Image 1 (cartoon, one colour):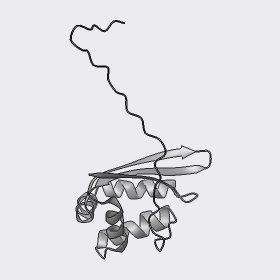
Image 2: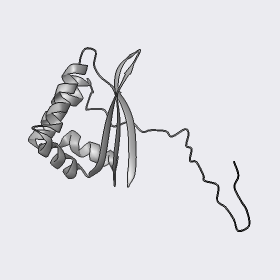
Image 3: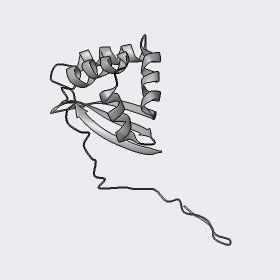
Image 4: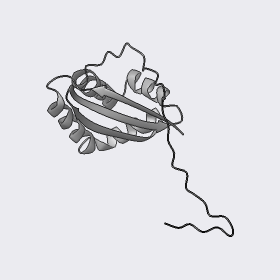
Length: 126
């Protein structure tokens, strides 16, 4: 499973509108949302609202076999929910130009804590 992370600004004055659309997706439109993601091949999606001095941003993480292809499927789908999502979330709330391809990310840092393992005869103190 591959992971794709990206940040996208909310259009000025659209944070509350965006929150209302998210409430629809987690409420009355939840089954449509879930089916949309299944069709697109998304196994995990997390979205965070981050408020910054330069405006509100959404930080999005999607996981699946091919996240870029998943985004392309949602961008071009003729399914009613996918059209609604494009019009309301991507275009209205974020102001995205869907004629532009999804940008490539460049990973610049990675950190993993490596636990210290005890070996026979050694003892951890502290």
